[in-house]
Amino acid sequence: MSTTRYESRIKDGVFYVQSDNSWLEVGSVDNIVELLGGETYTLEYTNMEASAAWLKTTKDNTIEVNIRDVLKSMSYQGDFVTNLKNCPLNEDSTTEHPKRTELYASLMIEILDSKGNLEN
Image 1 (tube, rainbow, N blue to C red):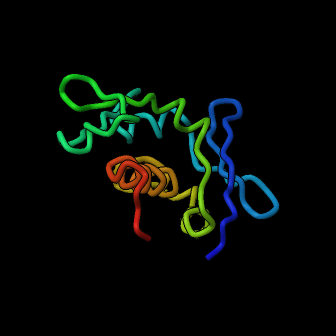
Image 2 (cartoon, rainbow, N blue to C red):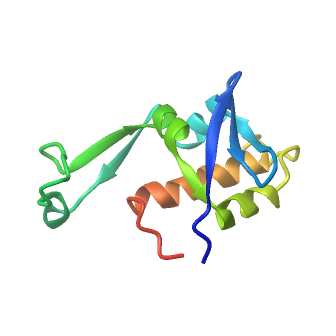
């Protein structure tokens, strides 16, 4: 299993993920924020999970993450980038967003909801 991580960047309001020799356009930051449900995303924890000393949740066992901050700081595994690369950017999906942008948002929801603990 490869441990290579691919960085991300935002330039002129557009989100990119590093690919092998270039930067792969994913879509506009505003579209990604919209597809993820807004500027923040709430992670919910059980009482047991929230009891971990290192986890700083609110009284209701949640943490809100700023989507724009997440976009600036994330890095991705090769399979994630390959999935994005294989999805066309210039085709609209049923949500009127580019398919690649929609795929990225869908994958990020999986990552966020799993609290970063994806098995595959």
